[in-house]
Each structure stands twice: as C-alpha cells, then as structure tokens.
Image 1 (tube, rainbow, N blue to C red):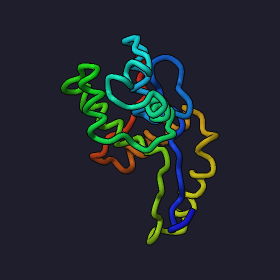
Image 2 (image 1 turned 180 degrees about the vertical axis):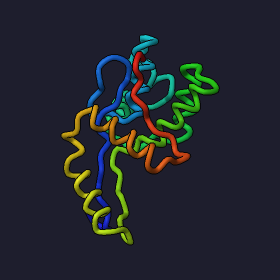
Image 3 (image 1 turned 180 degrees about the horizontal axis):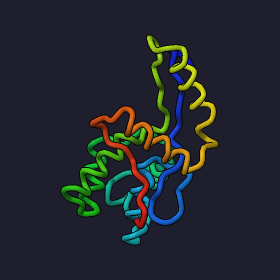
Image 4 (image 1 turned 30 degrees about the vertical axis):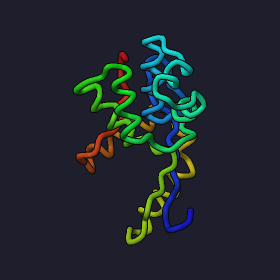
Length: 153
C-alpha cells in the first residue's frame, strides 16, 4: 500500500451462467465468446499470433489489461462490430487486475474506506458488489463504463 493508495483486485464477473471467479471483466467476456463459438485457446492464440498461455493468463486476470491492438484483433476474430466491439473495448479498460487508489488529499474517512475495501473485497458476495455498484451509480454517476451483471446472458 505504498504511495497512499489502497490496492484492489478484480475478483469475479458474470460471463454467462455461473460467476467466473478470479477473472477480469475482459477475461470473462473473452472466455464466454470462445465457449459460445466453441473456439479453443490454442486455436484462438494461433489466429492472434500470441501464446495460449498468454490468453489463458489474460482470461484469468494474471496479466494486465490487454492492449488496444489485441482488443481490436479479438473483435475482428469474433466478427464483433458496433456495440459489441465497443463493449469489449470498454471491458478491457475496466480489466486492470491490480488497481491502486490515490487517497492523498481525501478525508481520513475516505482513506479508511479505500483501505477497508482493499482488505475485504475478496470476501464480498456478488450481491454486495452489485449493491455497491448501484450505490455508486446513484451517488457519483460518471461517464466511465461499468460492468453490469447480465440477467439472462
């Protein structure tokens, strides 16, 4: 927790069916796309000219957020256009597996909240995470995209 920030890790997202643990939003969507189209990691990696180990690590949140170039390649590989392509790009932006919050200049309460969230985020239920998203949406709406749990996806 150097630099006054509280480290946070992405934990789980909905990828169609049961929650996918330890995945980033981009990783979960990538896996859902592969499974829906019955594409293996090996075949996709060969087509994108990356290793299957890299794609696996990307899916599981063990690699940083994907480059814009790789996101573009994935969009082309799956034939995603318009809204679907934009959604994948936005999910990539939300997919840094290790986030640092700079609480410098904030109130002691805000700093304590950031630290508490960093300490407890791994134990939060999906319902609690959804409730926290809803609260933030109401209290501090922003232009930035946010991952939403899909009801029937």
